[in-house]
Length: 287
Image (tube, rainbow, N blue to C red; front, side):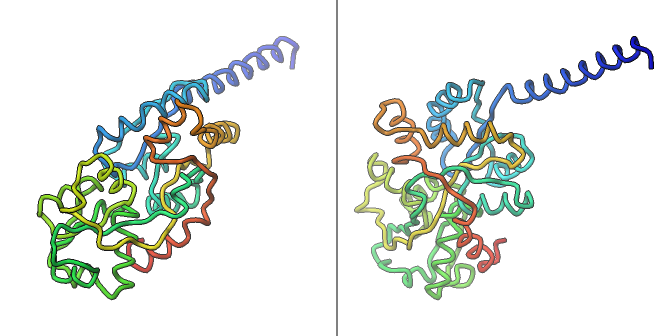
């Protein structure tokens, strides 16, 4: 091979490498995040806005919040790497793990998610305990919701109540706020929702706890987390994880983000934390 041919070959290889690098850089010019739609789209966008700005500063790239239509779409978005970071419920995380063959990695959760709870609510004065729900119209949230369906169903089964046999009618509202609204309006006699959404509604006086009250608070379980795909470059994953774990409630700007996420702070998490949720899903025939 002549020196000229070697030079041309080297230039060609260098050009190819630059194209590849440029393509990768272009692909990562925007960092996309999403979240399961467990609340109204306007509320999700409001909660995401300051976090997006924070991550832009921490990662040094444009960050966009990408809403999805349902829980399954959130799973598919991360599994197929259409987004880089996803806010999952515990059950949605398990679904993504199964769907991806174990390639979804949970990197952070709220401190509260280590001992999350669901609450059963009603506006019917005659309903005082779980056994009183038999024969009634009942609303879960989304079918893939951890605190709005899977774990409440599991606790009902443990109490000897089969929702598919013992309730007069089972509805799926699609979101926690929609379940609260359905119970408050008398469209169903009871429902199960995330304790954090319920507490937020009470604090904001969007529901009167004298009219709609909690009849049962579940035992604790692991729930929500921020997850990434295993194919994300390790350096970027470390930056994202560090950014989330570094949010400090002593700093006003950080506290705004944490308050909107209903978090005192974010802490590390791991796949093993969600084994109980996977077991509950398989026992209930939902996985």
